[in-house]
Image (cartoon, rainbow, N blue to C red):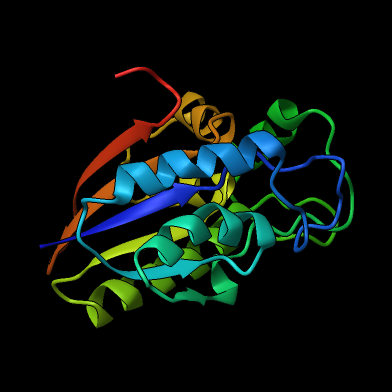
Length: 190
């Protein structure tokens, strides 16, 4: 068995429209320490990340403290929604969630997002047999991954992921696939 810890990035600066270079806020930089603290005793062997700055910055404190390189993979990037700025995420995402083939202008749809993420996860899990892995990613990517492995994952669960920064989701895998999922909201008191 191996565990994959998916890290939904910390709070990003929404005043920056560029998806690739959007940094973490001051709060996001502080909250990444919660990620480091949570992961410190999990026996992590390998760290992967979306190539986007906010995802890398969320996990870089942990990786640095543990002398682990971060391998960025393009297919872990966020959902491509064209160049438009989205003001009302809930109504925007309802269209996507209830029709996985829907896409905004020339962006990608949830089916495409899920296909590229699941293929990469299955490759990584197979490649890292017996190792514990961290993948720093984005809310929508994480939500469609969770939906793939858990058929009860619904729209309200999706919105929880979208609205929780940072969030860690632990998925345990054996040779037959994902066998358990556990959400860890780092901002809730234990």
